[in-house]
Amino acid sequence: QLQLAESGGGLVQTGGSLRLSCTDAHSRSSLDGYGIGWFRQAPGKVREWIACIGSNEAVTNYEDSVKGRFTVSRDKAKNTVSLQLDSLKPEDAGIYYCAAKAFSPCVVNANEYETWGRGTPVSVSS
Image 1 (tube, rainbow, N blue to C red):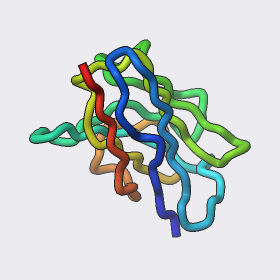
Image 2 (image 1 turned 135 degrees about the vertical axis):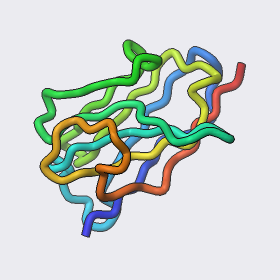
Image 3 (image 1 turned 180 degrees about the vertical axis):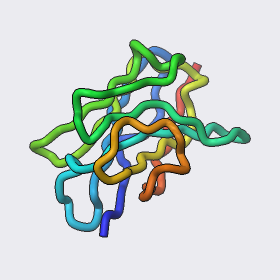
Image 4 (image 1 turned 45 degrees about the vertical axis):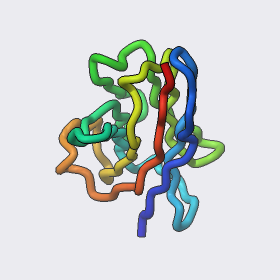
């Protein structure tokens, strides 16, 4: 049974970078068969979609505010899906979650995802 775990969050200064990873914490097996979405929940706000990569890894999509700064990709050697966060801004802070949907293209709607991780926190100081 798929169990997702995020890692890589932390505190950075404005303009800094972080690399988040999403893995199958149960078996460490590949996530290639899953469309993976990344979501963010800032304090006092609803969870919002940030980026996704389809099970066909050629297809990625990004929320407008992160286009050009965030990159989602698969690391086949590590069996992970990464979210590279560059040029971070204070408004990027929040808990970042990855979610999976089997054999799926890029999906924006959170309700369509089948499995969620517990999240990793990102803080950005000004």
